[in-house]
Image (tube, rainbow, N blue to C red; front, side, top):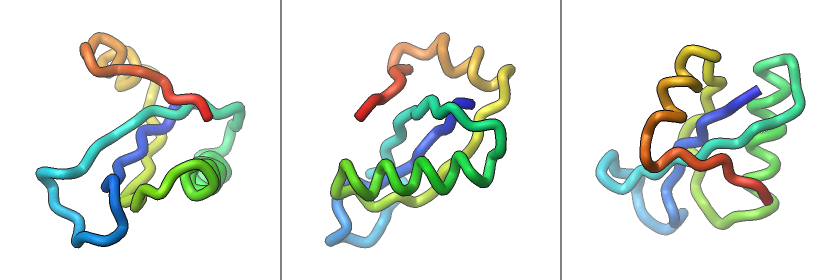
Length: 76
């Protein structure tokens, strides 16, 4: 299942829409809630980012996102 993680690069500043970044994680889960929890743990253990939101992406949305130039699945 593919997840899109919205984050701020630092926890020291208040979040701003203009500085929100995103990355994609592909996780071997079938339950959305389990995937969100796993994604949050991965981000906590591997980055210093402030995670704002994690969203499961449907197959149709994933197809659209893959067409974007910035699309890249992150692995840790």
